[in-house]
Image 1 (cartoon, rainbow, N blue to C red):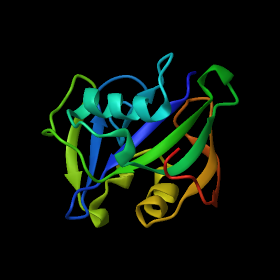
Image 2 (cartoon, helix red, strand yellow):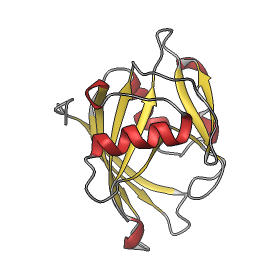
Image 3 (cartoon, rainbow, N blue to C red):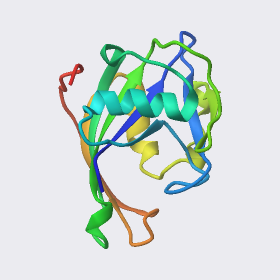
Image 4 (cartoon, rainbow, N blue to C red):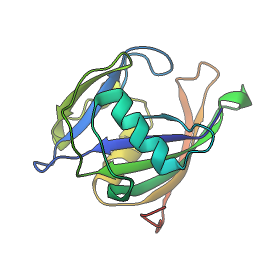
Length: 161
C-alpha cells in the first residue's frame, strides 16, 4: 500500500475535528482526515489534498505540524503495510462539510470517541494532542482491525517535514 497522511484540525477552542468513515478501510470509525499519497506529491501536499477532499478545509502546507511518524504493520498481508505521517493543523480556510467518505464533527479533547476509533488511537492520539512527537509501529491482526501490538517512543521530529 502507498504511504499515507493523517491530519487532525484543532480549533482555537482546543476542539479536534474528526470524521466518521463512511466507506472503505475503517468504516464507521472516527479518525483524522487523510489517505494515500499520489505519484509526484509530497506528504504535505497529500495531507492538504486529503483534508480538502474529505472535509472541505484548505490548509497551507506550512501550517501542518508533524507530530507522528507511524508504521502500520499487517503481517498477514504485507500489501496493507505502510508508513504514515500525522499532522496537526491549527489554521485553515473554508467551512467544514461532509464528503462521500467522511462525516465530520468537532469534539472536545475530553470527549474524543475512543470507543469508536482504532484501538491504538487510545495510546498515541492523547500523546500527540498533549504536545508529544512520536515514532511507532502498530501491528494488526489478520482481520485488519484488531491491534496485536504497539510500540511508540517519543522523538524530536522536524515539524516542517
